Amino acid sequence: MTDIGQLGGALNEALATLGDEFRSIWLPIQIGIILGVAAVSALAGKMIRSRVKPTDLTMGWPAFLRLLVRLLLQNIGIIIFVLLLTVARVGLMSATWPSHSYLLGVAAKLATAWFFIALVAGLIRNPVAYRLVAVFAWTIAALSILGLLRPTMAALDSVGLAIGGLRVTPLLVIKTSVLMVLTLWLANATSDFIERRLQRSADLTPSIQVLIGKIARLMLITFAILIALSTAGIDFTALAFFSGAVGLGLGFGLQKVVSNLVSGIILLADKSIKPGDIISVGEHFGRVGIMGARYTSVDTRDGREYLIPNEDFITQRVANWTYSSDFVRLSATFNTTYDSNPRKAQEAAIAAALSVERVVAKPAPACMLTAFGASSIGFELWFWVKDPSLGIANVKSDVLMALWDTLEREGVKIPKPGPSRVIYERAREDEPDPPKDDTDPPAPAASKSPFD
Image 1 (spheres, one colour):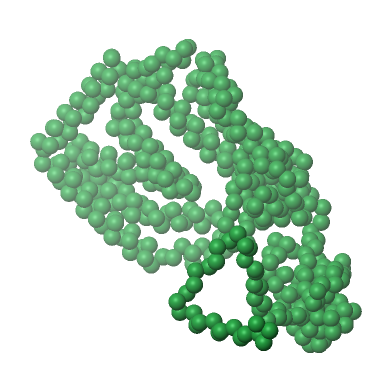
Image 2 (cartoon, one colour):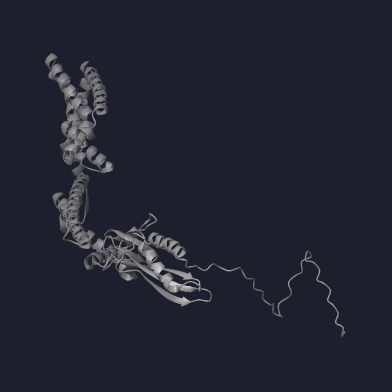
């Protein structure tokens, strides 16, 4: 409670100082100067940003310099505000006592702190994370400028809750959270850099690239958590209770999560599925996209992306169309009439398949006679493609259209359905007669036989 009293005393001193300023004519003068400088700075910054285009100015510059120029233009108003406020304070200090310009100095320091924090936090891509980091850092800077940082930290550390051998205080929670966010961000940035470097390596297969990237990310995140906890002053022996709870949760409630994680590592290690493969699992068919720790994405041709748990690739039957080769064989069936030459139909079918751009010439297409039907001859055309990721139904449609044109040009006829036939069934004796319709015409009278 003594630390909280110290914080209260510091706040009372600050309020007393502010109260003395309120009784002085110089406080409204300083407030007016700050408001006027802020208005002029905002207007000047808006004019500069409207006239200067960062894309045209930094054309061909390195990425870091382009980002720095963009951040400077975004905060140009703050720069002008600090410069004008510093000039105003120097002029005011030369005309009167330095204490009469105290508020101008505080405002200039707060604006300077916000400028540097905005430059550093601007490297964060996520807007929400950027705002959180900027506001938190500026709050710390403001407390330090006002001389309230140490009393605030002491007050936050004076209240705590003992859990086992660990004393949890608000200050410990804040420090741990901040360190955890920073170390995890650094670990993710480092792992992203490593993954980009691995993707540029032509000596590694896609599955090995993903495997090394996932292992590196897991290790970096683990080290980040350990570093954050140790830097915050947490004794790892005090976390035995939490580790036991986590182990119990893994045993009862997180079996699927662990199973998917282990299955993902197995898939990356044995290279049975790798990014870019064309697979079919269950009712899903498409190209393997991202292989994550818990799921694997399968991109379909209709724009949908299925997130399939890794465990399904281990327990279910999976067809990998490009496991050992990129060649995929497709087939198309068709019929011809009996008055058409079957050999001529085979030659026309092969020529039609080769006329399609995506059909490869080696292995060569083949056309097989499959059956002699009641009214037509059945054929099956086989052809190969090397790019199944571009779609299968579209190339099959192109082959069928080319087959239609080629058969028509060669005079080979395709059977057309005959006239519809009506089948009458004799009613069984045990079934009742259907009801008569009054609108039906009367039946003609039966003629008598001469022998009656």
